[in-house]
Length: 420
Image (cartoon, rainbow, N blue to C red; front, side, top):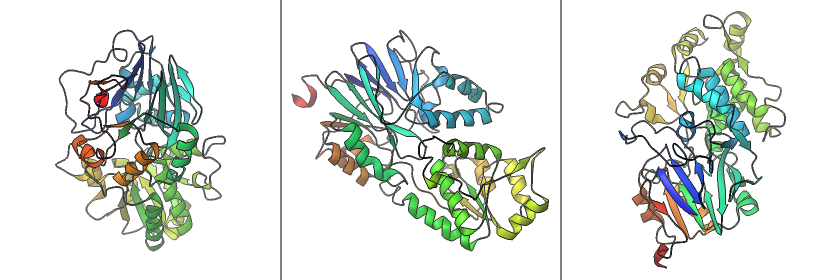
């Protein structure tokens, strides 16, 4: 089995990885490059994915973030695509919400109708490959790692993951039960140049929101609409503090996907509304807040889940409370005017008086070390990183680290591998 990282050996986001065996090709992720990533005038062309014979090719999607799924609209409709069911449903809701604003979202919605789904812990086959998906913890819900096996080689492709989320504690047991021995590890290394970025756990962050909402009556939180764990953490923090939890209809639809009967984790109280229902903003010519609804918000206080746009700016100006406490619960790089990811609308909506309360969706280096200790692979191939040299320096004393160039094949069975 050959391993080729077509993109992602030296950049975060937009990764495309290929596993090839006996002429069959299994690709993992095909997404947009992040703002500021190096661009090429030559589009990425990959045999069996974007061109050529597709009859022995398939694509696995680890999760629904745009840098992992965003370019599937460019792929031929006869190419099989596989992803988790809840993950597919969440991105369908997002694409449906945005389809009248962005043509790419309308195309994405159409492509998603033909996407196949898999279930965690249930292996499936494609050609000579056996794929075992396991659910991992990430800032995208229903995210997956894959054990990919063909011939006599087993590889674990981690996808994006972390060990400081609400569901991270199950990872060691999942590895023992469903992964077992692997020969090679293709591993995300997002935070290698930011070793302290993921220190705070989601539980610690939720406790901080609990305390803030009990002290402050009127609260506005800006976060990604698909960060499910953070949304439900905020919902429960609002519930415990006696504040109204307020969302718009789209945000409520996203949350409902996770709470519906039969959905994975739906039996957990973490992902249930209990007797305390979110309050949904009514919308006509714009959001409205008046009458009994406004009086209730003024009496009990509120936690509004907001997005940076004029409609939310308008409703926030009409909500009770002369002073409203604002929180940013997403990556603060969006507020850096010198960054390609700068979001001027978010900067405008937040203003200068806000509290930054966030933690990373990616693992820290101590967590990676623990994973390597548990799996003890023959070698590690880092992807989804902007500093592969730092990764090699950190881990190569104990585990062989293979630093590939984009498009360079790695053949585990080659006699020259590791000097054999």
